[in-house]
Image 1: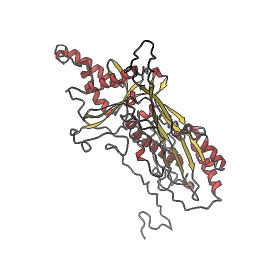
Image 2 (image 1 turned 90 degrees about the vertical axis):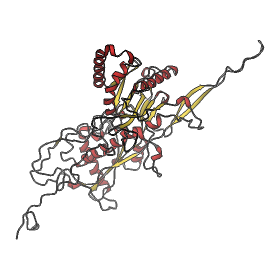
Image 3 (image 1 turned 180 degrees about the vertical axis):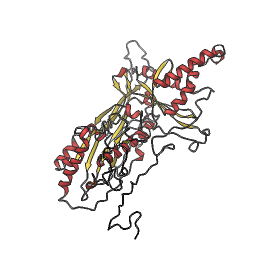
Image 4 (image 1 turned 135 degrees about the vertical axis):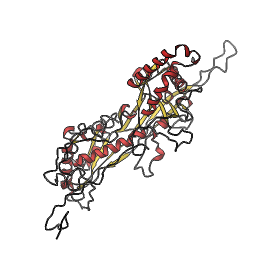
Length: 504
């Protein structure tokens, strides 16, 4: 997801300084209030118990965090909205008018029948994270002169963009200095990663049925709901079949399956149906894009060129087999290089998203040993040649009402927004010298033309080896390392006779 997630009200390059300034201001504002006992949470980056609080460390730090890159969420446009329950109207058809005819020439004709309508709606999600509490006077502590503060993160753990949801999250346009003694900035970085990990899979799996009873946590409807065959009128509950998406199951069959219908015929039929609907609805041309897991695309491009080049002409392959295979290899390489799938003589862009759910043999006994299954999505980004945006993010805009309320409450210095109003931040009242920040966002995903969207479920592929996954909840996620900090040095002293190597 695009790390354009944050448009701070300050210079992004000085975001860390501004955050510390806010903390200092809030400490001064809150000292008159009743204090509670703080509980700072380590580890810190530097100083006693710091994860990099060791002597002689080389400056360059390399991250092996598996980034969420290339996901669908990064590419979807975004806009602000403060309407909680929007109503989207559709004309879904016209009542039949040709079943009655007048008798005499001077009789009045029958009225033309009325049109039918359907109204759809949606809701915001809600997600919050907090930074780990930090003891403010710990910042800047140094074990010895041998501990360096010039550490540079070579490859930041946040991706470079996330639609417009994370525009420049807390000034992380430059992540190289996050370990250079910027304890609070490092903890905000942890919040940013947590938000990315929440957004990416819920683009597909978000479901309001997962909301907590008290409303503290909410999910927006994801694509598994938006691309469906159960569209109903928001005011009457009547079914609206003309808004149904094209949803099919591949039945957990392998993409190398050659019995009709194979993967090529199935997908080409779906695209034909959706392109025809676009024309029938006067919405063409549509910017259709396919979305699938990266490894599914890699395996699919192994079989697709030959299936495409031999569609219903298997009996004539033998005479030109060499040329056919050569052309198929060229097509495979070009599709992988430019990330597209050729269907019905047209190139459709492919978005590779590792956050799409995936089943293995433990989840589905119909899968082969070493096999996996996931879905392929067909999403319309825009219609009518780009003049109608059909897929986009919306977010509750925190720039106006919430900030006015904070100002009226004389709490302006403790609240601020980021990323164009996508995130609301609050600096909690300090627990003596311990501080923490909390952040929340309320997004939703809008699909205005569900009838132009498709989903092919349960597509099986059997790779030679599975790639690393990007989410801790996924089977092939890799991690490791130390999360508890390094032990502080314990030099000999008259108050520490039990130090290393001490003898009476």
